Amino acid sequence: MRHKYRGYEWEKYAAFCERMLSKHQGAYLLKTSADPPVDIRFGTDKYIQCVTVAPEPDKTSAIFTSPDVPEPIKAYYEHRFVRLICHKDIKLTRGLPQLPQSL
Image (cartoon, helix red, strand yellow):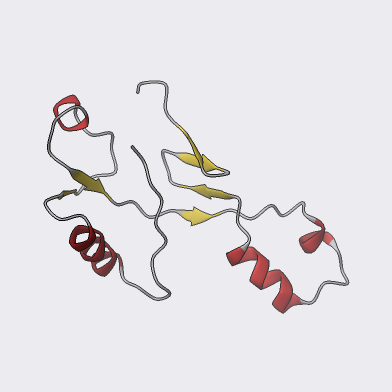
């Protein structure tokens, strides 16, 4: 099962991982961004795998292409109105993960 959580503004990665572990008591942190082994994926223990992602705003949107839109408005939409987030191995589009074929 995959869930997405957004870190607090200026929250460090380690602090975010600790917050997630405290929220999910008894879970173990996976320290790799690779697919977990079969025994972990289908086992009974709980694991949390935290990965950093980068927002990819739709630069073809009228907000970004119109010369009449002020830069502060563009900056707002660039970071807060994101419909696509990317990790080097996984693309999450509109909240639905596009899983690799190997899963």
